[in-house]
Length: 502
Ligand SMILES: Cc1ncc(COP(=O)(O)O)c(C=O)c1O
Image: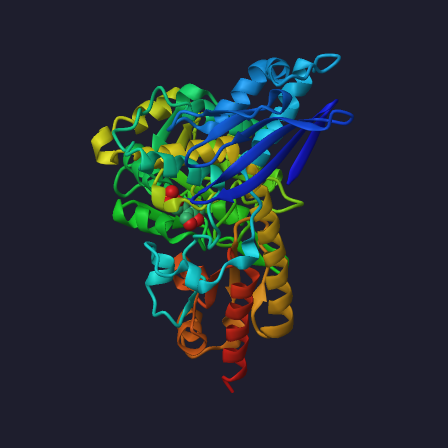
């Protein structure tokens, strides 16, 4: 139970199951000396209702089906908490101050929307069978640590909107793009988290981030034009350049003893080979680097000198660990913003990639206009569930993400310790962001690539480093977004396979 105190009034939030219905209950009490329940709101997924308790008489009023009962309760109390208390036979003296009511109700709402998580509880049998490729592509005895999906349950605010939509058969055409508040939500999130305030008129909803990359390549370059990419890189970057017949200008990241950095001279040289565009990945998959301002400034210098259009994939921007800070590339300066298309989504941080919804933020109106000249139907439509899940994640899901991020950070540290102590010959620089570890297995001198070795000998599925471009050969990527128990099992199997090799 979570308790909040406001003068003589106490709010208690508890997540309950009552028969087949589950959901949060909010109880509002008068503190001592009265010490009694005044109001109770049972925001169950079925049969939500509230209790008014004047003089011990329990008056029950059902809430209308289909409305978001938490939203209803919080708005009602925000509008007139003092009035509700008076109806329940209690007059706070002095009346509760409006600004403090709003502040306490914000916290009450967060607690109601986000029940505690038990991430340790996840076991393989809870993930299989699945509709997704992570758990279903390989045989059942192989533990999957490849595709970038998390094994964690989704945030309750997302589950709630999805369940309501399905139960009400509310699966018609979405109201897209207006009048959803996705543009305003995107801007507010960028401002709050990254101190960058783009123009809401320059936001467009897409089905996915990779779609944004491909459409941008199509609209801002021609076949044969050069496109700079920093490898090793998330494979669809390479695939989209190849499939659109653009010329790949590879600028491998420099692997120093301290981790990956930008090869500035290489970047200048690549840009000088007739580059039209730069596809940036920040935070970077698979290295997990969060580029620092001075590194981004160097990239920006090259971008401006060669008048490149930048597609900045910032899908991992919400998955940044302590001690690091994500800086949107477009936030560097007005000039840089005007040439940058920022792509992001709730799909990675909130684990809803299957719902297919992403956001493009254009740094200038001409960028947006040209991008949108590709007929909408070629881009495909966006599903109502994807839009609603994104809205729920960004409006109400932060407490879930905070908990998940802390768990991931502990998993990352555990992975680092395990590699150091128990996987001799494997090198690893702990990621500053993402839940992906990039394992350098070259010193192991395996007789096949590490993906195959660990699949066949450890029954563990990692992503094959070679798919991330030629600098990825001899590497494998591990996904550590799972329970500690599954991660330990994955690593233990890898340790044993290496030990048994000789
Ligand atoms: C850097 C990066 N961009 C894009 C994606 C995929 O995004 P979407 O499914 O929206 O295309 C991923 C998925 O792991 C990724 O790591």
